[in-house]
Image 1 (cartoon, rainbow, N blue to C red):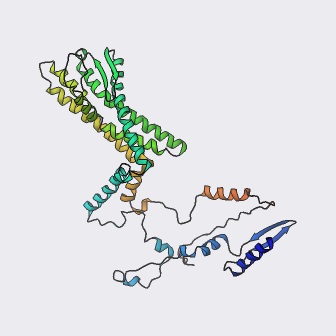
Image 2 (cartoon, helix red, strand yellow; image 1 turned 90 degrees about the horizontal axis):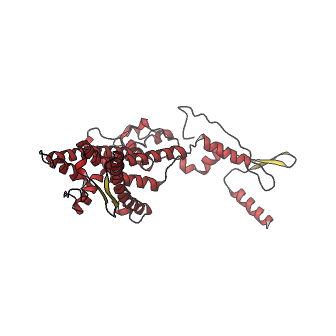
Image 3 (cartoon, rainbow, N blue to C red; image 1 turned 135 degrees about the vertical axis):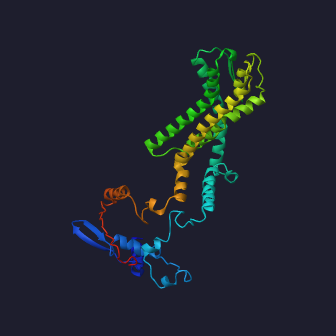
Length: 365
């Protein structure tokens, strides 16, 4: 069997176009093999098609370059990493529309109906459902905490499937205290979003990455944080919490200030405008935090990477050449080769070659 295998190996080596290997004896029982070509030359010859580049020159646009032979490096320069490189400055509106479309597609790709067969789609749906209930409870827990810290007596604090019954004697509160109660619910949800972002940032800095399910949950929480006042209002309307029953039943957040000012001679209209102002301020803060998260953190800054590819010039990117690896990877490969031991005690010898490329030298050789 060994003689037949050896015969086939010699036959293949004889008909092969690759240079033969030479075994050199160094000492007693110590030998090493020497290839006819250097490692890089051997790799280039075996992957010759990868290094051949044919440029198609449009004779109508540049007839003077039709007969010019371009080097491989010059051929690579025809390919751009930046989308903004060949943009027409006269078409700013169309270019901005295309960039916005790219970013919007990246944001809605997780919840697109086309992704319904993927596991990530259903993970996002689950995160939205879980975030909906947790956000609601955190909203009312923030209000309960403020009332408790302000020593305001609470008559009812009951969790329900779609809402929380938080009841207190509203007639005993000053205007600034009622304003704080309305604002504290949304602010508690925003503060928890900031805590989630800080946790994700710390994990990413510590171990290098953050898990995708966590990104999806924080993204869902961020969207629900922006919509929190509207969602609370819809639930309050469903439970008819716009009525004032002298403290017998809870009052919806959007109607607290209206009834507070309604008990005075000025009427409840100033309270309605003040509620709109508070919701506008807190929603703007939530939108800013959500914008920062989706731009800087979500899915390892995927949107920011896409924005740079669309907006930045080619000079802002630093890209490695083809087949270029990092120093740490080279060291790991060399160390693994040095530690290798064969079945009969063979070892591998690591040889490092330095090649200095000089501007103006031929790239096709």
